[in-house]
Image (cartoon, rainbow, N blue to C red; front, side, top):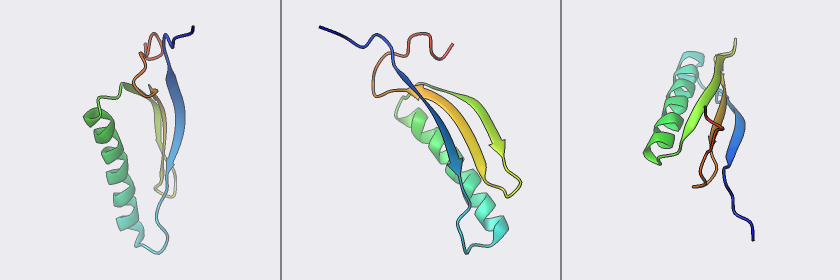
Length: 79
C-alpha cells in the first residue's frame, strides 16, 4: 500500500489583459484578478508560497506559485 506523504504543485500563471478593453482598465482588472486569486487560496485554506510575481511591460502579471495539492500535507516544500 502507498500513501502520499507530501505533495505540492508548482505553477506559472500568466494573468493576461483582456482584448478590446481600455488599457488602464484592463491593467486594473488583471491586478484585481491576481488579488482575487490570492484571496481564494486563503479562503480555501490552501497552503501556498508566491515564489515570484512579475509585472510585464504590457501590464499583464506572471505569478510563480508553489501550492498545496488537493488536501495532501505539504511537507518541506513550502519552507
